[in-house]
Length: 310
Length: 272
Image (cartoon, rainbow over all chains, first blue to last red; front, side):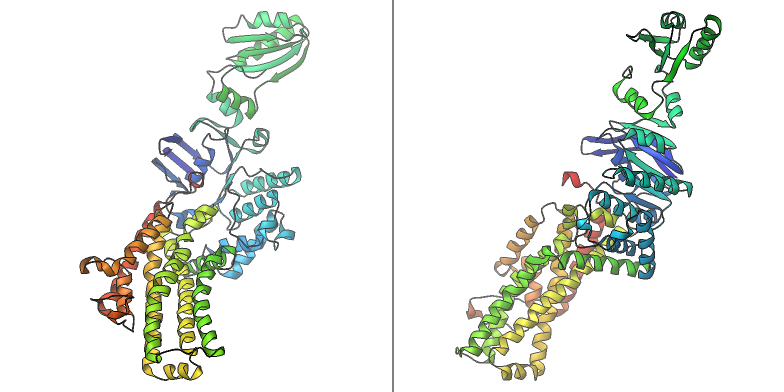
């Protein structure tokens, strides 16, 4: 379990993250936010690469400033695309495993297993300098999981991967989570995060602005209206009845006179009303769709303000 | 056991990174430079019969002067800059320091392990230079002269003393430049400042002479230079009982400071 207790990090006078209190449990947790929002800062704090200006970060109770204990539990695949020179992929993973103090034979075995797990066995003995971006990403991933950590932290792990490798990587993250590990990843590819994550943490300007599963995040921001898109044969009737609800915020009629985008603070009430309209007035519903029930919509909501979904 | 393996792993990685690639070229140029000078002299004396005034005694004094000026103050000094400064600073510039920080190794152990890897390389390289130049000096007069030197206890003592002084120089300067590499973004500035201080050491009053590495190293050199040589003046050499523990204590303090600095280091590549 990763725990942030009122953590702030400042780079001089520049805010990294501020007053973050967060607990991350086993499963896949995604940190989502635009560039510079503080995702990497949070990851570097939980792996001890940065020290908090205020507050405390622990992993399974181990403070982040004790690498000798922390890094036996944690593997971190950073975004830094740099390698010690002159090494093959296998030597890279093996050399860094040796820093754990294991015997060389054990390091070789673990390195081979991790490289196989990321699907890079064929290229394992080629110099890393000759690897493609996707291969370099995968060998870093192998290095992060080679020592069998309980917590795997992955900064933008899908960057540079082709669709096939991306699908394989996602399978790998899922299998790591199924094994009971805590997998923390960051991504700006929101669609993939949505499909992959048990939980999302939305980060913006150094603050955690929402945290939970997608519906949970929705609950967290209940004061903001929810958007529902529907298409029916009598949109004007539906619109007029919805306006009678005090929870209705805004209704937009589509130009084709069939579409309707409803902003409401109480989705339950809205759905009950809609049921009544169908039963009493025979309204023919073609489509009903929550317009912002994916991460991207929630994210845009939080980051850009209300009403951005259309 | 585990810590010993970790230290060894750091040493293997460091030696591979720093001494088996293109980035080792400046270090090897510093190795080659004195060998070329002494080699050229030996070549000229042996093959072209260039006459050399004075006997072995003259050569001993000449080596004493060249050892202090060329080897100790230039080759070993800048060699230690080239070997020890990049141990941390080079990794920051390469953006690869985080790999060490993401291993279950304490920062103190890491700093000591890096220092030991630099020390291993420096001792091998600069003692190699010391040994080779000393051998070339006497070999230039023919194998007989070299055998004569090596057949006496005095010759072995002289050679052993130079090797010991070189080793102590690596220990002392290594610790200085390890700390400089951890503490400064531009370690060349303190390196030049220290070089300036060490260079004027002979001109300083006794109390300030003590605040330097070169003073103790020169005190331990086996052959003194006549005052009229105009090369070096060491009016008040330190006793070996002060010089050796002094350098070792200085190194221990500086490595401890470097380890403490390393504990506070953060990965902030973007701002370097």
